Amino acid sequence: MLMGTNDLLADMGLPGQFEHERVREAYARTIAACRKHGKHVGVGGLATRPKLAAEFVRMGARYVSTGTDLAFLLAESTARAKQVHEIALR
Image (cartoon, rainbow, N blue to C red; front, side, top):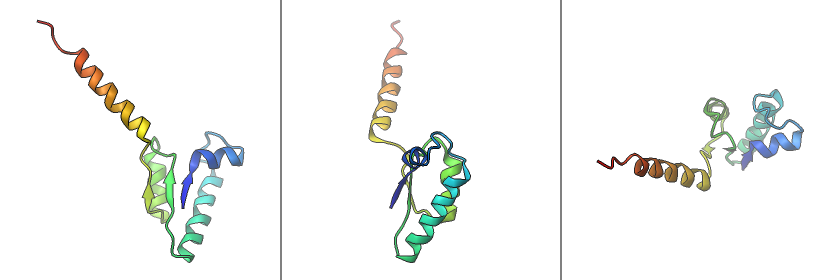
């Protein structure tokens, strides 16, 4: 089960409040339920919050989404554009 933390926060009426205790409670309940049924929990939406993702891994989550294909493509495209921009003309 992959938990999309941004969607979870929106559904809870807590957009952007990643450190809210209700988020930790939701992860704890979900991890416990998944363990009971032999399933794993995935962490999504925390690519910019590695400490919080690590906390959930320590709680028992076993998959961490580190970003999206669009973000990876944009980052590499930006790096390549910078590389070309920095070519010395003389």
